Image 1 (tube, rainbow, N blue to C red):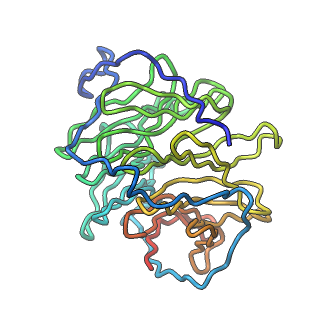
Image 2 (cartoon, rainbow, N blue to C red):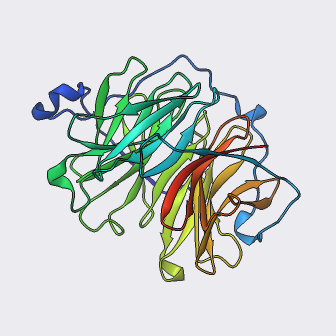
Length: 324
């Protein structure tokens, strides 16, 4: 398997609060005193995943729908060990908002009174990451990353000079993973890792995006466009620098969206034009399909194995929580 191809940018970016955007605020990363697990205690690798087919195991899930009251659409993107869930919803005017679901109560997450917002990931202490954009940026790849601290302060997260930055997850030590891109979103999209020391490492793989990682940041998952397969979208796992493609057998699209400390990976795949979620564990892909849905997409998993994602019934989108 090839080595992990990264370009590490030898630069540091400034750290300023969101209110300083007009002055060029760029990046802030929250740090915590979380221990890094030594390599000796890490779970075993999942294995040569690209060669394994879909497995319909006996494992079942209990599903709960997540709908923000009054929303016309709701998505769920991330869940932490405590069970806090983040995602996005669309109101009756068509504007998108982020949300936090904690102890059965929804809290709206808006970067500003005007910006559209979506929350993508939540850390163990409640730090939230995602993206925002202003009404005048509604067309084109004009997305900006953000960090919402556990105190509720918003901080812009950008990878200059690129047009767009999306923050997908925040790891326990404050590392943020996501992607950056310019006008041609596919060819210029690259996965990025923003360290707690404010340096940015870039994945030098065409059309790539980082979507999740383990707490020690030695395993990361995401998606990329495989140019050797007519730009088919495939998932990937990088473990200590080793790159492995993740492809559900017979699928036209496979995306990996999150990984937990046990090495369980969740994502989605398309087969015969229908989207399904999956969890990859013990060398098997297990479909995750919300009962009665016309499409299901798994987006996040926590240390307990709880899964969040999105399902559709016709044209209506809902979030879900799946537990075992």
